[in-house]
Length: 147
Image 1 (cartoon, rainbow, N blue to C red):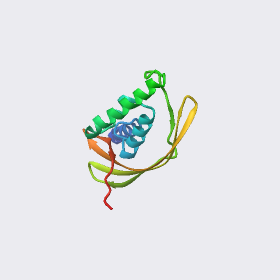
Image 2 (image 1 turned 45 degrees about the horizontal axis):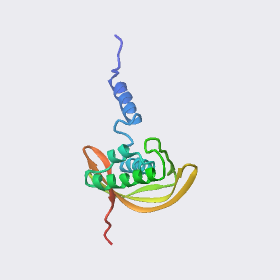
Image 3 (image 1 turned 135 degrees about the horizontal axis):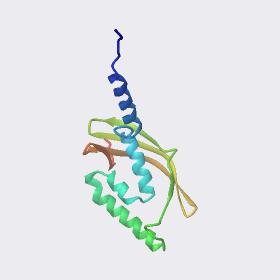
Image 4 (image 1 turned 120 degrees about the vertical axis):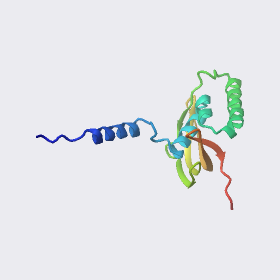
């Protein structure tokens, strides 16, 4: 009689690998979402920014994005075709504290946004609050730090 091994452990391992490499539950750490939020706000990707913004900051961020759009239009550019390239590869996102639903991140470094071949360098030294809402992390403004 031949012994047959169950393929269930192999199937489980395969499913786990697929889930952790395709973004289904993987990579969506507060740092990852903060990096995506920063990239999108510097590119003026309105819907993507708002998707990653907490409910408490939606109105404030919408006002900022409206101001960006007014600036783009006043400079004779088309909002729908406006594109900016952003390099945030040197920006560090470090967890300072974390609970189940709130994370405080240190955001430091230099990023470059290029618009119409004109680079603009900005130095970052901020502390951001990330909150868990509806099962996902969202940017929620500057963190209040006790001195």
